[in-house]
Length: 100
Ligand SMILES: [Zn+2]
Image (cartoon, rainbow, N blue to C red):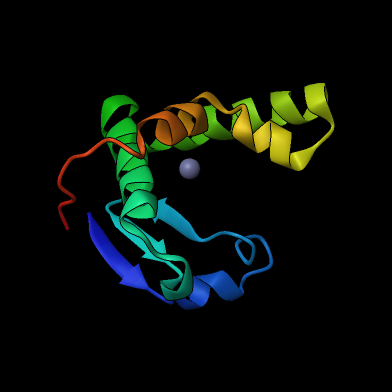
């Protein structure tokens, strides 16, 4: 996974409030928010994409978010309850090397 800092992507309204995002084999990170824990979190999303395929990852992720949003009527809770996010948050503190 290649890490790219301070991409112009974060100027997009949809991404403005995010610290990092994985797109394909690249991880875009706001340098001001970076940490080993954040990079591990994004690496876990990369592993999830490898597990189910990139297209399926985004399809399942978005589907779970929409279902959660209808259920909880709250963006933060809908986001936190996405199974891919729950796995990434649960495993982000694992002590393992980070590869770029
Ligand atoms: Zn995440």
